Image 1 (spheres, one colour):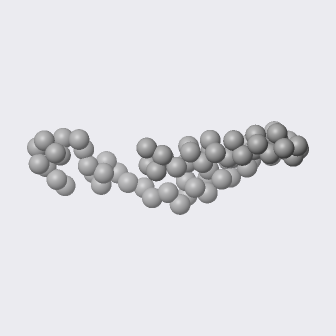
Image 2 (image 1 turned 120 degrees about the vertical axis):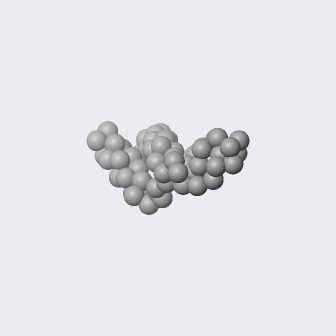
Length: 68
């Protein structure tokens, strides 16, 4: 799900935005385009909450009733 892994979604959307800027005639060197993607994904990753498998639960919880 995109909300569970926003960093990958950010990288994809940023790549599309850079591509769109290039199509509009904005000159962006390849190194700068890569840096933009890297910086934005790092920022999103920093603010993404971390969860563990115990916090999320397991598929067997519904069957066994074992809720942690």
